[in-house]
Length: 358
Image (cartoon, rainbow, N blue to C red; front, side, top):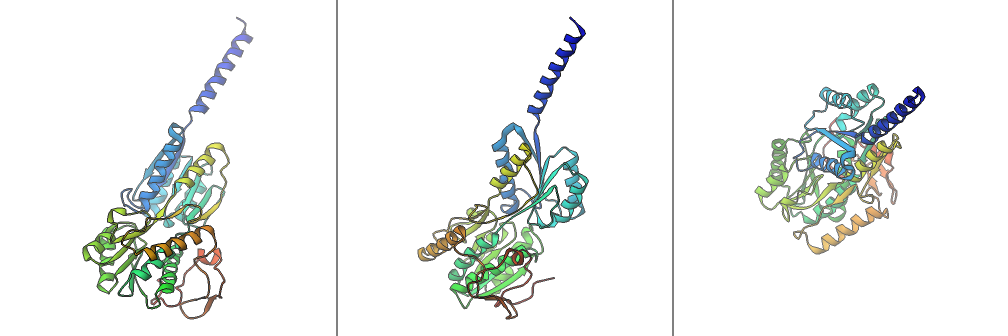
């Protein structure tokens, strides 16, 4: 056999080997969670989406996750370890991970990052969020008609625009169906702390609230309301249907799976680019959990009509006339809020008492 023949055979063998290696390459996708996967709310739904990625791609994808990661320097450590461990794509799933994501992404330009609910992007950092305020509008519509005390309690996590938007949307739509409604807001300053969340719910119930809305992630407020008796609640981020048909009468459900699958596929086929995504009920990113039998039929029907109008775009959750808390004009009759204002919302609408913490 000539040297030329040997070299040709070696080249062919290497070609087959490299092709087999390329076919066997797994895309590694990491997930950084602010709470435990069993929180029953926010992190639970992100983890359900991770499992959907595994189901969609099978052995072509490996996923890894770290749960209960504090929003601070430790988040940078976790993200860096994922990148060093070979992650091709990393989802960082809480607002407070924004700066850590940007910092780590700058050190790993070949890794793609997806940050949930933030606004800072880079060539290898995309942002994504859901229009949760659409779901809050539906909850407010139901809550305003379910309360008999006319006091609705709201458990806020942190006073960031996402949470303030939700409070405003719920209040506007509760007030539209019940002019006598009053909101009482307790800030828990946590995303997930069952003890604090239960305490916040109990405080609001003691203050006369017979409906509790929450923008925190555990089911503790549901349990507190169940113990109290005649108090209506709504699931947050996940269905929390185990507390139905009462006190939990409906829910906001975060459906991240289609987005996570699409973005993983984009990394796999080389089409990933840095983008900003903000979808709502119409795109399926925000779901409204089943409205239970505890809600009168006419209220259920009107809530479903509101949901459908938000979904098809015939109605916007922030439609004037709406004033700011100080009475100054914000939206004229029929005018709708622009995304820029909503993205940075740091004020209450007229009728809500108390200040947005700074």
